[in-house]
Length: 348
Image (cartoon, rainbow, N blue to C red):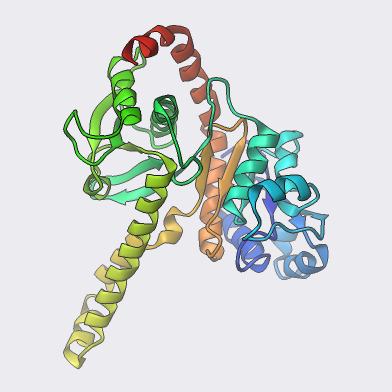
């Protein structure tokens, strides 16, 4: 990375902030030496942490604020009363052009509400979507929306599909990524009206989208498609179910390998393979959900992550900025709006 970037950080967001935030920046500094940081939060808590990492201190600037958005605060309340909070000021830095992107491990609903209010949405997009990577049998796939929009109509799903396809091409480097709509079955007649309409639009769009059709829940892990599109209600349940299953498998494996002296010996002999398995299943590798559709880069880190996970969220932000993701989304939606309105109306 040759371009010098600045990231604004909500240093008080997350269960283990600000210690986790500063330690995560310390890890990222080695791989991303050309990134500077503006840390928004309690200076009395942040400054001593920076003293522990002199080379990190040189690339960080603290903007003091004592206001914090709590995890249980309603988005509407946070939007009205949190104007001087660390989260809001960090977002404002992107809106004012001081920073290239913002990262927070705080309240997801508040972050979405504030980011949408300050940054606005890209042309042609009515609602942003939360997206993240999923490990699959074929590598990695992208899934959206994961909780930003509980109720979605056909247009919302089509917008998510376009944004996901652009992401897969520009960030994942796939020449022609496949897109699927998550449904209760793969048959054409399955699903509610909105998903049926979205499928018809995607089948007949002028955009060069490789639309696979409907996919089911087990297709996510199989990697049947590169981009899985769904509404936020279904997507969030799928995400939490996947995370819970991964933890369950990890616990069962640990119990099995420590139950007897023979199994413990087997675990020692298979240590290398087990470490590879643990790395692939480590949720910290996939930390850093993206708010796609905003007129600016906004990354949501998991609130309970550690410095490794937060460092990965920083890497995601830098990747999206340097790959020009929003420029690609703008281009595709300009084409969709100019050529696709009649197609959408006819399909509906």
